[in-house]
Length: 126
Image 1 (cartoon, rainbow, N blue to C red):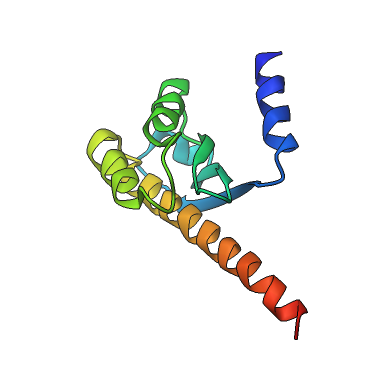
Image 2: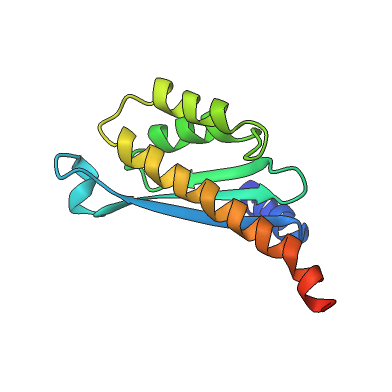
């Protein structure tokens, strides 16, 4: 029930958006046979860019939980350098480069979404 409550809180806040990014996994990684790509999904609050939830297709629960602990609570607007440094310096798995690339794509998607929403009212007024 706890996970369902957490999801409901995310859904109840219209300022929280879900962004995802993907990157090719190296052939040598165990999860490559299951997934050819590694995915990162972030639930981000639009107002302050805070990551309120994170998930990844890393194979083990420990790796997923570790990734969450590294990024949740940080801001994709104010803490970009810290997010990148944490993941690059603390995640030493063979999927590290793919994880970093997928995360970077999430951040790019968030910023594109935020820019498009910021310009939407201006376009309507024309």
